[in-house]
Length: 413
Image (cartoon, rainbow, N blue to C red; front, top):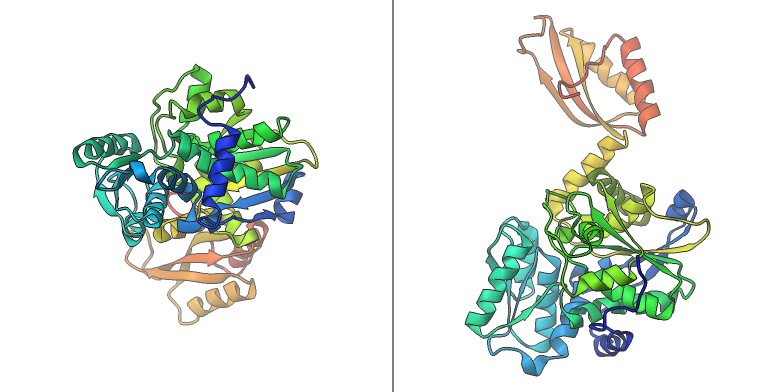
């Protein structure tokens, strides 16, 4: 991509001014080295943990800079925003700082947890729209009719400048940064970070990551202008944006070195890895940079300093349970087995003894006796097991077969 000067809509001076304004009002999040991910990738990997930010994501930076820098311009009925979750909470927190009311328009599909979190920060929630773009249009209409000031989630210079304070902090903590990897939805986060990084360390690379399910930025950069893409379901709902911004696009075009796409399973694996290896709870969008690293999508040079921006940790509890279980199944550490067992007094106890001897942990067990394909002298035991991995599972199945318990695949397998 052409690394001409960035769009004049956001400058390093504006990001530095935002940093001064936000000092003491938002959290200066830590940059944490990861020996595990460094060893796995061959690079020196650091995590910028915006999961520890107020309201659980980077969004409060941009919202607070936008609102606090223009309190005198706020409409008499406060501010209004559209969001699938994190911007909503960021605006609610920032509005509370400024002492103004906040109304948030959210897509109809947004999780109940994110609705409740937004309400908990004192905002009024309106559910309208099947996409973030539809919710934005509704918020703009309500803003005009209700004397409210609209706070765009990404396509606003002061929002972008607020997000850019992350880039300042990265270079303050790690001046030798070689590559910064950022999740991308509408482009506000990467536009701010890229402006801050490239203005001070032009040789550093800035790479964006999107879910393959919604490649709006990648499509725009390929086309040379913002395009509307189909937004398929994704666990990275925070970056499920059909069209990048008119302000963010030229900044990304000029300053972002590469845009990569990651599959759903890679994001699932990254969420699980962050939780197990670093004890960091990340939402799907926040884990996208690690997904790009571990799936080999990033251009890496041995030993270089790579910063992954883990942008937020606001994941729905019920979704988290599904993500973790899916990750465990994919890694071979959780499995479902069906085992026919003779209807004899000691048969079930022998099955359980075999499982215990082989070190398998039973998380769920069930029995069926009336299936049409079962002989009258047999029952079928269904098991959900925790194992150490694929080699352990192979040994377990061999032991079951040797003990007279032929393992059957599940029908969907």
